[in-house]
Length: 237
Image (cartoon, rainbow, N blue to C red; front, side, top):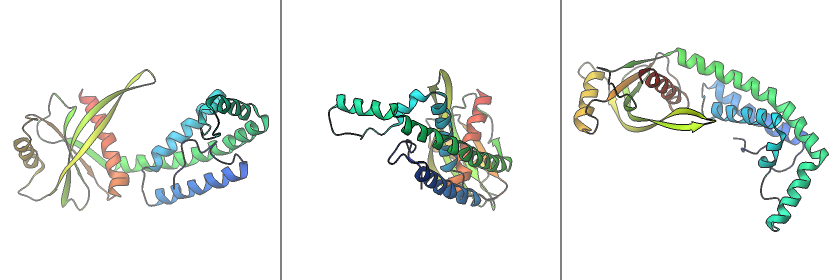
């Protein structure tokens, strides 16, 4: 269960209905956190919380959050009906009541998710594999957790994008293979094999993320590993 991006103004704008809708969603989020499953709910909570803060601080943004399927008339008539809805004091009062109820609810869930994230990250370690490379924006990521019998191997590439006049880093990963870990196959040996197979990266960076506790892999460990990798690459740049 997830909330639509425009859940606040989608469908019936009624406090009790939106309260029921929101609490049902947050119950699913809490159940997910109890299973130590961080994603996608943690990133969704961040999005919804920031969105509500922005709407509260700039009510003009509410116009953009209303669903566009309000009328099958011409665009001109649609804009007229749209404007009337925004200018309706009763509707706006209801929306403000929903926002005032929703913000602390989102904040509580977000705090729980952030605490859980910090717990997971505190039980993970990241370290370079073999010699460090001067170029760290592309390379390999090894991810493993107890009982450390297998290691998932990814190829990664750091991406750059602009957001709010700020340059930010993201990361793209491509799964390559799963390798068994044994005395004859160290992480350094695995890296050397990758260099021989993928000659377009003759001197790649490689990092190992090792979790000391077993966590849900795709919902928790892998997203945390990627964020740790972005931080590590940023420090190396």
